[in-house]
Length: 113
Length: 114
Image 1 (tube, rainbow over the protein chains, first blue to last red):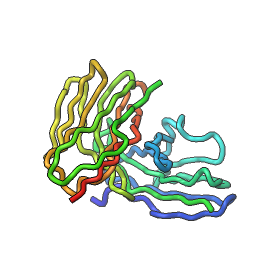
Image 2 (tube, rainbow over the protein chains, first blue to last red):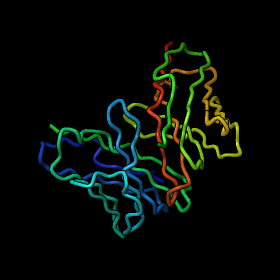
Image 3 (tube, one colour):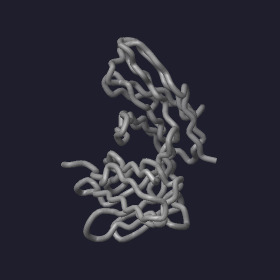
């Protein structure tokens, strides 16, 4: 069981480019959650997805950010036209039904230059 | 407003000593409270999880307490080791959203010196 896999671990983008962050949940997990951690800040909830459905996106900025969890393949967090303020660590977690086995990945550190 | 406050913000102790970290929350309705350990550059790893009816839970040298009436929790670390150096995060889940939203404290940065 490889755990929650996030890639890339580090991502550097110039302002205006797109960033794509990937998260493969633990085997058997069908719930995925994305969090953002700014320097010196706690993790902030962004979005909660199940396969092919967005359940709760109340923590995600309305513009430039989108997330998906397709039937096949990893969950993707997409940030369009990145700005310096998007620089942060983005963590993904997955769980089974009822929140069982809630586990975090190691995160993707996005740096916008 | 649902919030989780932790204290102290940072703490330095000598190897072998004990320490206690504090967490106060205002999250409602309450579902459970978790303590996580986050090593630098890594994702959070769960240490303990407690529901409303539990007031203490241990995991090796880590012991968490919960007072649901005063909405306070503590994490006690016994006989600290150098590997305990990390950020310790208090996380509270509510019952309001579909599966329970997690609210994170900012963490206490613990440094253990030899």
